Image (tube, rainbow, N blue to C red; front, top):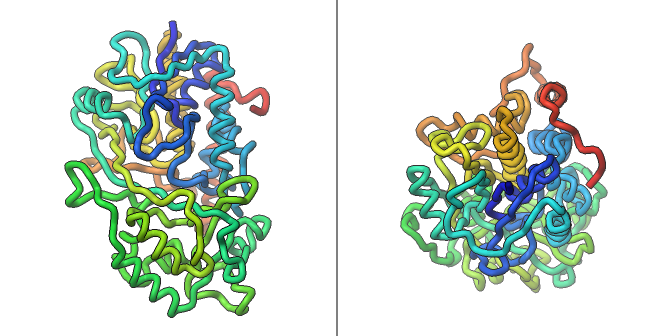
Length: 444
């Protein structure tokens, strides 16, 4: 009997792949291209919205550890990301179109995954189901989930604009990665002197924003990791200069000095024809984005192929309704995965899909459900979903703070994180050996 997976985003694709690769049959239901959310544009699966960066890659970082754990557990998404990477210093960034195309092809060509293109307006009444419809779940299904789970939480996040490479004024821009990481050509940098920064800051602060819609527009919660740059700027004149515009690790070859502030552009595609404005998630009106961001040196004639947008994300109050296996307590045949569970980030969403898919199949096979050890990043995030945020549950991305401390304590932070990562990979290996959780046999 097929397991139904609703939603072909990152979590849904990972869940479907895990089921299919381990002996199950899947019906994957996706409403695109029949219907799109306000944030989606591509008919392909696993569409990346806010950014093309999957964060740091080194294993002694929280984000890098998560990806390595997922790869060792046979992740489709991590393998596809590594195949479609673009230069990004110490981060794993991907060609957005190539990535989603590759994931789509792998899913559609898998003989054990039956893809159905339609809007799912209700959860099937029978069978095992993985709900991975994302934070922009369509209204009818969201209403059912809301009733089933006793109410949902919500916050706003935003996406950054994308500009064409040929429209940039290269005479005002220099190529470099912070502290000379990567190839040195991974980022383009738009340096500002103090006067240029103060002019930009003033215009940003007073620029007109696009209206929000919904019941909580008077006091919208914004997720710190995707905070609109204009909201961040309200916190003080130096907030963004010590945030996304920080000049540390960079030296302008035109002056020989560190700039007052720097706007970084990260390559969006493998060909280097598109760049996104790093840290410039925004809810400004489109005309205001062109006007205000045009004040950034090198962007005076920038051609925007996508303006920044802001949208509402809905997520479950997971500690009240889900286990660390991503199973719904009150109706065990149902699993949830992705950002709607309160994990925050592309790979975090995919990791929840990986666990939800594996456990949905184990339920069908009559096997006990599993969660990796709490000393792994995957297991720690799953336990955040089950136990986190007493009284005020909030989205959580990969970080070492959710993991148990290592003993004895190591004072040096880099050494401490390296030791935590080494422990995590050792414990994951033991977990896999004890539970027959095979590692990938071949590169995707």
